[in-house]
Length: 88
Image (cartoon, rainbow, N blue to C red; front, side, top):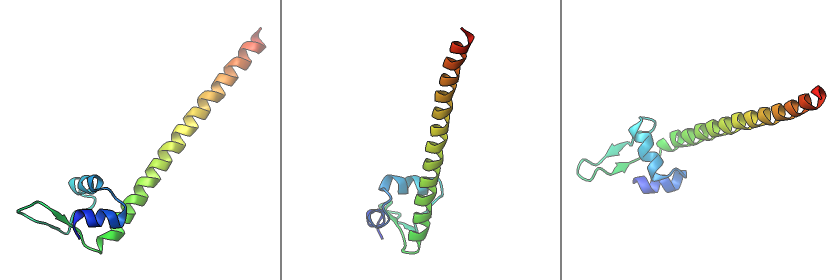
């Protein structure tokens, strides 16, 4: 499969496929030496899906982490306001 076909089939952008190749996450099955076109095999669809799931998990963890930080900041502001009221 050409890179565009593979991208359409897996839902992974061509840029992300190139990035995955560059960092060794998902190497093409074949690269044409003349044109430098990347070709992927059907067996690589499973690996592509794993990469998507891993990426979603990382993004979800990051958003949860930032949500916790924001909640902690909000709680500390409330606590600070309450301390000022009690102190008076």
